[in-house]
Image (cartoon, rainbow, N blue to C red; front, top):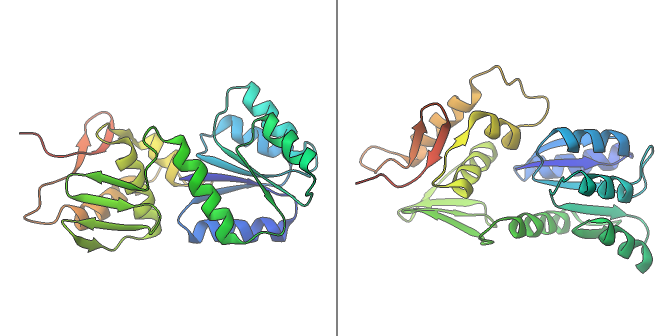
Length: 225
């Protein structure tokens, strides 16, 4: 999943970025509201974490602008203010959640998981395709009851494919949701990571679940009859 952080305090932004990357997210960072609005209008983020008090445009204004332009990615607003009126203003503008500073990284991660879960048509914490199971909270994978060890990037790729299952996901969509804005889209890294997953998920003797859909991309689905 790809997350946008908008925070003008560099140390705070880096702290959040590092925590999200360690949790397996692809992360872009904006230093002010204007940059955040531009990034959000031009990239398909899965969620956004926006500071309320920012130069150029404040977080509430950014949320209101994005909602008017049809950007529906969930937004968590961060603020040092604790007044009820401020929280109501942000939620009425279109934000999905509000987190007061100072906050723990574990709470931010939990709130992110919650808003992302609500975005899915079937808001569950476990994804299943055949005998493959992905636990989104524990961030573990099992196939036939056997634990599969995945890197953060492999987990993010498998999560995207399983959320979309049985539909195929294009390479472009994979890049947009699993890698950040600094990724070189000219490389074949998507194919490389799909092969990493196949080596772990589709072992010899196991029915293949990861499929190449020619002209489209990749899909996780049970084999046909």
